[in-house]
Each structure stands twice: as structure tokens, then as C-alpha cells.
Amino acid sequence: MKLSVRTCVGLLLLPAATLWSQVENAPTDSMPTAPVPAVVGPQSSGDQMLTPPPVSGQSYPTSFASGERSNYLRGGMAFTSAYTDNAVGSLTGHPVSDVSYSVAPFIALDETTPRLHLVSTYAPGFTFYQRESALNEQDQNASINLQYRLSPHVTLSARDGFLKSSNVLNQPDLAAAGAVSGGTQEGNFSVIAPIADRLSNSGNVGIAFQFAANGMVGASGTLTNLHYPDQAEVPGLFDSSSQAGSVFYSFRASKMHYIGVTYEYQRLLSYPTAGQNETQTHALFFFYTLYAMSRFSISFFGGPQYSDTVQPPLPPLQPEPSSARAWTPAAGASLSWQGRLTNVAVSYSHVISGGGGLIGAVHMDSASASLRQQMMRNLSGSLAGGYVQNDVIGSTLAGDENGHTLSGTASLQQQVGQHINLQLGYTRLHQDYSSVAILAATPNTNREFVSISYQFSRPLGR
Image (cartoon, rainbow, N blue to C red; front, side, top):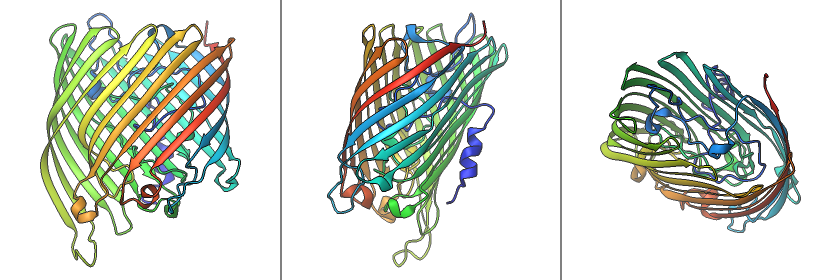
């Protein structure tokens, strides 16, 4: 293990951390928890500027505009039963189906003061399989999301999330829908091994300073880590990590229009058995955000991105490490609408990112969308999906692992009384990576699930 578990857990304990960053572009389902509103950026008050999505480092909110609450302690228990046609991920091309039963207690704290907004969640889980009892697992999910106003014009924001599991399709849905972000720095967790122990951690810390009526500067740092404790379970996949930093300048041209520029640096690492694969990037992005109304925004970013990749030697073909340098364009766009009965978030980006388990960094085309609709007073539905194309940088030297992931989840939630919630859903996952042994033979996974949860909510203070 190249980055220790201590490193992962240490990030979780950052004093300034925010909402768990869900598995990027992975399907989300099952185990409904109390709604935990995401913190996108400083809320506008008077002349206070917003932090545009391309540089905020946060995910878009997933709750309805009328459903946001703060200063609450929430908790409860969820029971989920699921059927999957690819429980093991056989290398022979004959997937094994199974039924699983999961129990997940959860607790969440949402606290707001004039200077602080803190959302923290902890949700362990226990899963038992009907046929393949050797797959029985114990999960850990934890997240912290914090915003603190250091002064009237300086805001600190941070988030951190830790996940320990052998099945990423079986996790509590902490954000109530697929996480969608308009940012330029996002961890790549799109490559999904069927049933394999893994640890993942993602954290971000940022600071924004409004130095003038219409001017803001800021800086942020992001860390991600992906580790497979048993490499034999995931032939063709590898540990990876990334560190990134950025600085930005934002100008408010009018109440609705923000423009700016950001510089970004990334160090992307993967750890194949032959050594360490490293890519460093430098990028200069220009961005524009339109706040058409208080809960509707559209953002764009784009600019040049430079990459410098060093790969370990691959004997007997290469006696020395190989390298590749290139300039490539990068761009992205996103949209968020938070209505009283409808919530929509959509994003697309073309950037250089970590490989998320592949042999090296990738040119990533990523598209994700989330729709949540309140159909009746106690009945709501959600759709979440994503498509990611991963093209490994220098793949002609390191072996062709290019491929794509397509995922989608549809679910219905029915509130029964004040404390009981029923959920029914379906997840479809397709992965096309012909050179990754654990995925090539069984690329498809279908999963149907039903969940019942009890949850309570208690106001904090008076």
C-alpha cells in the first residue's frame, strides 16, 4: 500500500472538511438517509459575492428549495435487500448472481450559526449475502462539510469523505441523489470493481477573500486516495492518488454575471506492480457563471492544459522509464436548478484526471446528471446517471486500458408517516475496459433493490 490507511483517516479528521464526496459518476441507490443539504458556496447577502461552481470545490445541492433545513440532529436505521446478477465479477465470463441484505444505522448533524455551517454524517453498514457468504462485509462511511466565515469578507470552506467497502453499489445515499459538480478538480472514481475491498478518501479545503465590492480571490487544495487492500481481487486495477491546488480571481460584472480566471496544478499518481506512474499538469482556465435567479445557475470553463507523464519501464520492451509531454484543450459546463418540487443538476467536463484504478492518468470526458421530482406530498422520484470515457495518457507505451463507464439509477421514495421511508430502485452499470481482466469478462451489472428506513429529526437549540 503506497498511501497508508492512516493517511486516509487523517484527512477525515481535518478541522475544516465538508460533505462526503460521493463516488464520482458511480450509481447511487439504496439505504435512504435523512436529507443532508450540500453547501455550494457562501450565500449571497447584500454585497457579498458568491463563489462560482468552477472554483468552489463543492457539489450542487440535491434537496428541494422548500426542503432545506439546518440546526437539526438526524439519525435512524435502514434495511435494504438487493438482487444483483454480477455479485462476484467472474474472470470466466459467467457472472454469479446473489441476494444481499444490508443494515445501516446513520446519524447526521446539521448546524448553522451566523458564522458557521457544519454538516457531518456517519453511516456504518453491514451486508450479508444469501449464497456467497464469504462476501459478507462491514462498511464505514463518514463525511464532514464545513463553511466558516473568518471575517465579513473571508470564508473558509472544506469537505472530506471516507469510504471503506467491498461494494460501492451498496452504500448509503448521503446526498439523496447522484453527486454533480461544476468544478475543474474532481476525483475520478468511475472504474468500479464488482466485489472487492477498497478504501477511498477525497478532501478539499478552500478559502475565498472578497477584497472589493465586485472582486474576489481564493485558493484551494484537493487530495484523493484509492486503495485496494487485496490486489488479487482486482487484476488489471491499481492503487492511485492525487494532489491538486489552484488559485482564482473572480469579477462580478453585474448581479447575475461572474467572470474569472484560475490556475490549477495536479500531481496524479498510480502504482502498477512495476513502479510508480506519475503525471503532473498545469492549466489556465477562464470561467463564466450566470446566476439567472437565486437557485438557478449556468457555468462554463475552458483553457489550455499541459501534462508531463513519466511511466516506469516495461521490460523487455523498455529498459528505461518513458515520458510524454503535451498541450491539450480542457473545457466544461454545468447547470443547477433547485426548485420547490424539482431539482436538476447537469455537468460535462473534458480534462486530465487521475485514472481511478487504471494504470495511469487519463484524458477524461465525463458527463453526469441528476433529477429529483416531488410527484406527490409523500412520493418522490429520482434519476441519476453518468458517462465517463477514460483514455490513458501514454497508453501506447503502458498498454491500452482505454474504456468507458456508463451508469444509471432510477428510484422511487414513499414517506409513510413521520419516520418511515420506503424506497424501490434499479441500477444499471456497463463498463467497457477490454484490457482490465476483472472488468473485461463481466462488463455488465444489473441491480434491483428495496429499502425501508426509520429516521428521526431533532432540532438543536431553542
